[in-house]
Picture 1 (cartoon, rainbow, N blue to C red):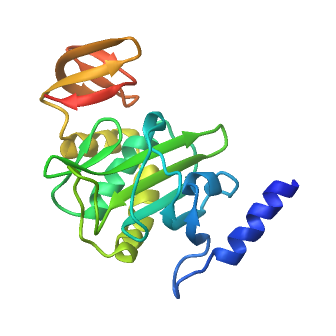
Picture 2: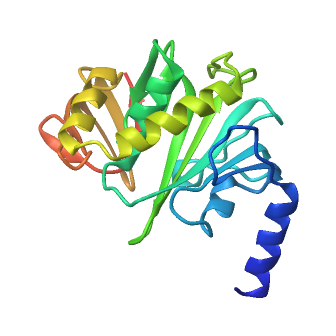
Length: 223
């Protein structure tokens, strides 16, 4: 280990604690820059949960803000999977319960408002799947779940491995059922351009099919 990695590991050991009966590999931290930062150095099967993030972020380097202790903030170290972002969305929606829908590519919605998000960072050997869900506080215009964080985490610890290991066709079928994007007009902001059209389906690689054309990246607005 390098000195920086050793120092980080020692800090995690000092700050981390496990609940009685909690699976091994779950690290609970009080405050971190981002759970993703900690999880990158850990092996597959590890989970990092924090009360607060000082530099939480979402997709496209957007910031993720939450008050200390007000959200589920967790990163899961999983085998690489090209559909992990969609599988994680399905898993999170299942863990949250009825009423939670999915917005392509990685948002959780409740009552049409953003409840949470997913950030996947993949390498050839593993993937880091960050999940943030608003619980007893949310930013203006966003939704919150009013759920106990530990009960929600327990359900995610079951659903996420289940769905990340599921067959692609099973993941895609369930994502379609939970989607709030398909069947409606959308605006997609791409690097250097904007397109509008009907979100018709999800492709085999997780791409959004808009007016017959695949879209692999972009910021989606429901119209």
